[in-house]
Image (cartoon, rainbow, N blue to C red; front, side, top):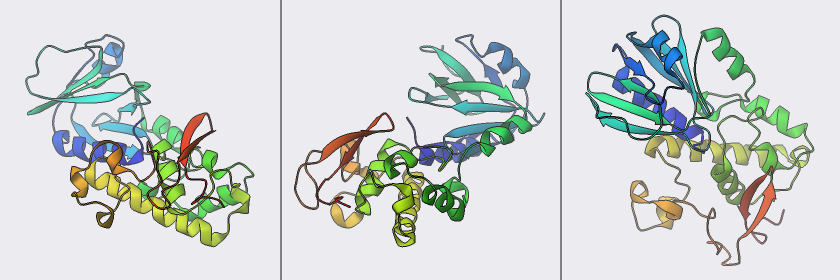
Length: 262
């Protein structure tokens, strides 16, 4: 599932590509056809991101709300585009580019009040100027493990399974440590590391948690699990011990029992 850095990257990219243009919006698959007609032929003002949600704002006040979920993907094409391939839920066709959306969890037309309702149910988004104080307030009042709290979108918007594992490893925190047992110093370190990781992800359009001193390659050239310190790996890069997995919040979390002893 794309994490918050990716939605912000897409929002910036799609705004640059399509803002100020009249878009032809269709649904080759058919499931979005009625909603597509409500915005097709209108000027796109901007695409905005909050957490893992995207909102395409049109001149009429309507928005297309997209949540990619685990399987949602965009395919970029030239305009005019070729015949759609696969189950394309939504096609946005601009002057020079077309994007096809397949497999999203959510794709619907809404108004601003519904957008505000969606956002109000989410926790602060570190990439949207989210309040550090509010996140601390939620974490410090909860007895749930930090490994679960980081995935709770009502506590912190935009963090997914990779950022969770990587930031807990970076700060040396046991994934089962409860939120209410964190010191303010621990939280400050966690927040600072998480914001840096997410900003790097936004810069490159992909999660990169290793730093330049830890690899001979340029960070932008790293692919696959080479981009991560611990996620998807078997050997810890610090202690060379075995990396293990633990299930927290119904997701498998990579961690090092030695470096994250707590």
